[in-house]
Image 1 (cartoon, rainbow, N blue to C red):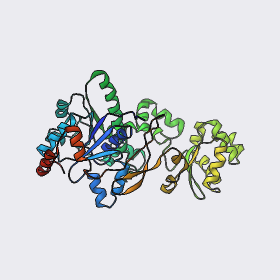
Image 2: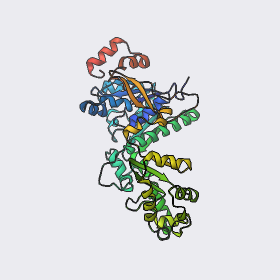
Image 3: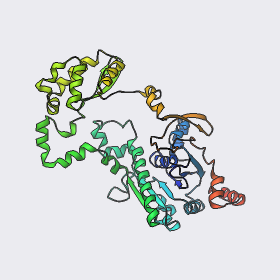
Image 4: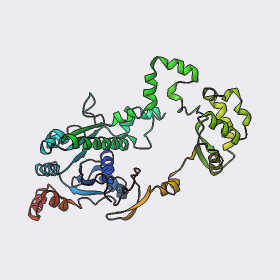
Length: 402
């Protein structure tokens, strides 16, 4: 069955995680993704190879073809330009100015193909006073306020949100530009700043800022400022918290009066329903420490499974804090196709993550792992550019391809 982006050709000249995630999403939606690497491979492949973890490439380079082109040479740059004429999308995440040196910037390639959608992912975008600065995930999370918001300004983030979420936003921009191109026939430049994306996800920061002159009134009502409403590690909210059971942790959410009242009955404290400390949401916020103690005492005497069963029966939202072993045996993830396997060149069958976007009647699961470096070079140059064996051999001698 045809996938949504069948017939779309994507040139993926990116490295590390942000650009490859963008191209991965497009590939899993059916686009033909041609990953273009230099003879040594992109930096992520090189790092994974050096630490003996090249199998991990299959978690981000699914359903792609690999072409090796030394685009820093004149001949290699010319190959990229020619490939661009046959492509719909070009994805890159190099520091500002790098590709322009080889005449592979947006202004250069749009001349080759006016319908091209050119996506750039950088730390700070293509405009503004920091646009020339190089950045990585940790810098995007730092400057976007995420590390501060997570109350972890002194340690590296545990998840690469800066890279992976920015790649997803680039894919959204590409899809919008492709749809617009259907009406106008014109290509577009997608400019993604990782700092922009991280700031865009920093809800409490701009919610607090938007409140402006009401901040002090809100803080007086709640007994705390809005920024720490749900994130104060020393004084968390009883209705939005992770609790320690006998064998692990479980998250419990009881935001509404109805949920809170049912929770009090479950834990054997129905008298607290009428307690003035907990009579409404504001009361529960102002007396958070007392509420935490009541619930903690009950949870600590039970296993995670016992707590989850008791709460689920009364429709109290809850969930186990799962470690990696838990994740890879999770029956819900398994049922949703999120735990799957693919064949990876040189490694056989590898466990990988499934695709989280489900489209009725349409396959979107990964079908292959990471390609070996350059395994599709000859095929792509023959199919898209019509090169013969003689021309390919000549380019190899010149060091333009390998």
